[in-house]
Image (cartoon, rainbow, N blue to C red):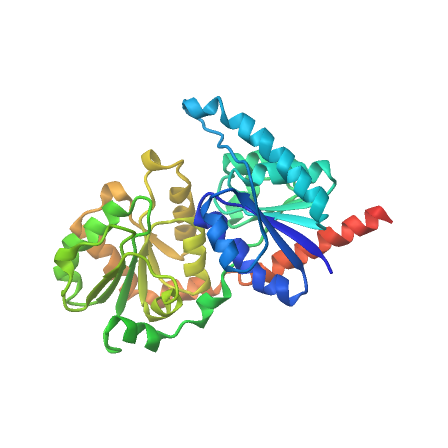
Length: 361
């Protein structure tokens, strides 16, 4: 039986692609372990999946001044020692890292113990944690064609992102029933998310009386961000967060309005959902969402509306344009070569194991 350590954390985006790999890893008879931070979001998500979880010390590498910059390097060193001890104990055949700063000690320790590490970069340009890990990695998987320009040619592979299989099992009928909607009017799904949800939410609420004339609207506002004044609006439902029913809501959606996080937009591509993307502005991020969205727009998958250009008129125009041209967007997405990232990544992991065995022999 082959043995793998998955790692990654800090945000759900550094965990959900790992979770997407787990069913196929189990089916292929892998023994799976997970290394994350002591109390990060990944602990609950992975424990719920029934995978053995090991916490290590983790620090953050900041590009700005913060008093924690003086203490976090010691946390990272401690994490490296803990990761090294776990790798020595578990004896994995391969490491798969989805990124985040907790993954850095694991990938560095893997190199020390001559265990091949495969890492995955979600965004167009590698984040700082992955930049540190790339020299120690055997293979770097990428979401976007443009990312290959930023990676070592002998390590880079375009895979796309692993998609949770349950997302493909959604039912439009169940989604409509859950929301109390009818089947004879189009559905707009708004995914406000968590980070930076306020501006997107406000734009939708400002335009709500106009939008509900044409669309039924499902609005995922983010925790603590719902607007009680909109409750009872005909053709509109809002939720803080949806987990179990999300595949059904996505199946019910005709078009989607979203931020441009890499995992979220790759899920929309996999599900062939025409979409309007409002990326986080550069002032609120390192600019990765803007680059992600621009890539999808170039490939014909998405319509971009920049937050600084967001008004009632521009938002309505964007939604109307995508709704009126749904088939054109779906046709472009059908041409995407990134259709089975899970299987491709599994092939890379198997090859890494085989190469290691060949080297031993």
